[in-house]
Every structure is written in structure tokens, then in C-alpha cells.
Amino acid sequence: MYGLSRFCGKSGKPEDFAARGIDMLDDSLQLMDGQTLTETGDGETVLDLGEGYAPQPDQPTRLELNIDTLDYTTEDETYVVEVKESDDNSTFTSTGLIIGVTAIGQISKVFSSVKRYVKLVWTLAGTTPSIKASAWLNQAA
Image (cartoon, rainbow, N blue to C red):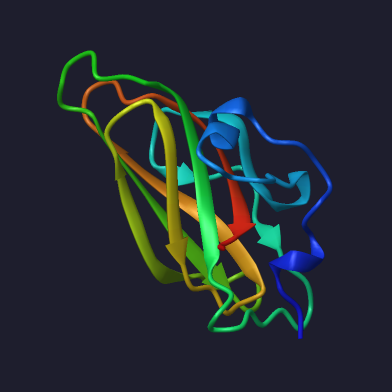
């Protein structure tokens, strides 16, 4: 059985996450690296957690988001990100984690994932939506 711990320990941590007690953000678990989105779509990476990936119920997964920029110019923009998973990298279903993003900064949420592939799906709406974000998975403590 595999878990996120087999990936941990390969890179450093941004200062903002360090201030919140996040010990390690691993490059091999990065879903987005400063990606800018201006319309609804997927994050830049589908993460392959490996054949046989099966997290333990007591080993939840944490999504770490860093929101660098967020446009509210016309005050009608909305930003929602959903974590999806798949057994085959083709048909994705929701993990149940859906986050409404309303400000620049860091967001950290725990969710359960039991499938091999994980991706982020963004829904942007309004007149001029634009968001720049980075995202990682991390083993929840």
C-alpha cells in the first residue's frame, strides 16, 4: 500500500506556508506552479500518485493553495476550485472538496482521495476573472 509519505522530502517550503507550520511542499506533488487562469478549466497538472495508490483512512490528504493574484475589478468575478480524482486518468469524479476563493493568500484544506490520479478543476465567472495560483498535495498531519 502506498501513501503520500513516499513522495515527501524532496523540496523546500515557501515562507508563507512555513509560518503556518507546513513542513514540506514537495515538487513531485505540485498540481499548479504559478498558473494564471482567465476562464474555467483544469489546473496545469494531473498528478499520478502511482499504481496501487491507496491512502489509509487515518492518512488524509491536504491541499495547499497559494493565491498570488486575484482580479475583482468589476466586482462580479467568482473563483471556485474543485479537487477531482480518477482511476484511469480519463473519467474524473469529485473528492467532495470544493473551495470558493475570495482573497489573495494561502488556503489549506483536508480531503480524502482514494484514486490514483488527482487534478484541480477551476470554475471562473464574471466580467474579467483572472487568478494566479500554485497548488500542492501534502500528507495531512
